[in-house]
Length: 208
Image (cartoon, rainbow, N blue to C red; front, side):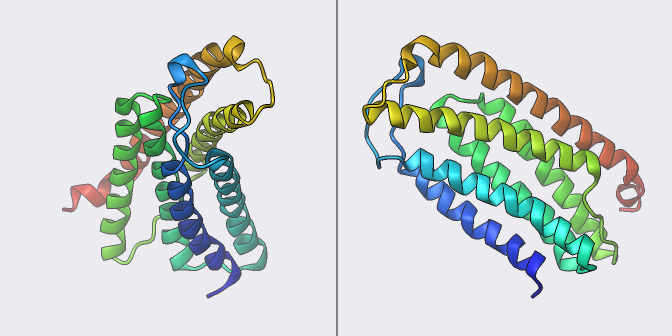
């Protein structure tokens, strides 16, 4: 297994640890910050660092594969799949914290399942459908959205640790309006890229 593929696989591992950190985080009542503590200290901070590290591997594996001529069918299939698993984990774990409405997450994940299904249909016919540039832009916005909420959760952990960030003054508008704006852009790009991908490869569906 070459280096880019190892980085792709590492993203699956980091996603699993990320979910564990999110599950052990403090259950903040974000509507009335700072809320109550009922989890590990700095679990969300650890989750943020893991998520950012996974995002870096997403960039590196593609760059290394292209520059060194190490592109493989495994990478073309598993790289976008690793992205989808990572993003699904990020969005799903934010739903209980009231960061993003559940219906938005359902729309985003449904799109990912749909495109993955299309790639499986193509693979059964010996065709590999690589990720497109618009899909990469969509993933980047999704990463920014999840990272934004994780950063706010991390800052709240520092607040609870005794570092006065005056969170009660800015938490709600920053969490609600800033986060939902990012989530809205990510949703639009997700739906637009998904519908476009389906249209460009509609012949694969028509043949079934």
